[in-house]
Length: 432
Ligand SMILES: [Zn+2]
Image (tube, rainbow, N blue to C red; front, top):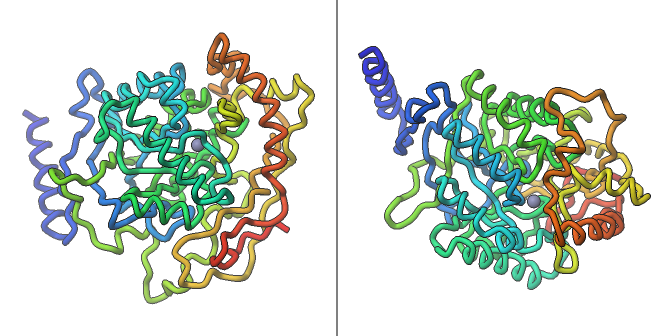
């Protein structure tokens, strides 16, 4: 009875809120109370229906718009899967909390593990595409090749699903290596380009405790937003339960994002809701944002996009940089990248006309592991890391490609200039 009363009060409160604002969220809530067997679950607070054609680029790390979230609302995203061992654990953890997320899957991974993609669908998560081969050079390659990567990746995921409609028109560019031609093509296809609002650096060789710390710290700084994680990473698996627990403890709510369809119209919103920092009388939109959101003041908040996650070369997967590459590279005498120099903060602001930030200087992604600290908490050990490596013939291929990737990485990361596509003014990230 008490529970019913509480639900009633909550409903009336929501109703009052909805009546009080023009943009009442109509999606129904699925609170923790709807999570059988898990009364303390975080739950998914609501479903947000978006129309990619109305908002083709989202994520304040690179764009002026992001999802229209309320304060303390979070959207979880996972890239680069599926990789059975780790991705399945991520699915189990999310299921135990009745949390719905968005997965950006790689075409080749979908080909290798189609059942893993179907598991995402069957669990009710949103599935987006993440290219066929996960190239980290979408900002530099000919647009025709970029289109091929996009189209092939989408086709592979659809084939794995066996149902075109099961793939959301959501796309994340590998390494967040945005380029106008890529985004324009995606938009022309009715596909929404997802950047992110904050990261947890879970592709770096850091402990799971560090992943947790970064996720929570950066979320607290923004108060809401899209979190980019990697379901293929053992450290992410280790960090995720604590992240979800803490999200609930701090009053955050999970929002599940789905695409609009003819049967399910977009959630009504106002344009300003899509801006994380709406313009005001004191913040002219022509000068927003003055600093790319990926430039932070301290090294411990380095929010480098996922440039070092999985890549494909010569038709085979190069596994994510961590958790298993470091030992492999050292063992093969392959030097690791240098420490990422912090980009200086330029006094120049972006011209107001720019609606998207440039690709960050690739030199900032040259990440050298800090002196190894004492193992923390649930830090994945090398043993754990090795569990992510597929076995058998594929392992051999991966091992060979790890070395190949190390060499290629040095060619791909010149460490000199920020890459700015023609026609877009160079942004304030200057690494020279
Ligand atoms: Zn990726």
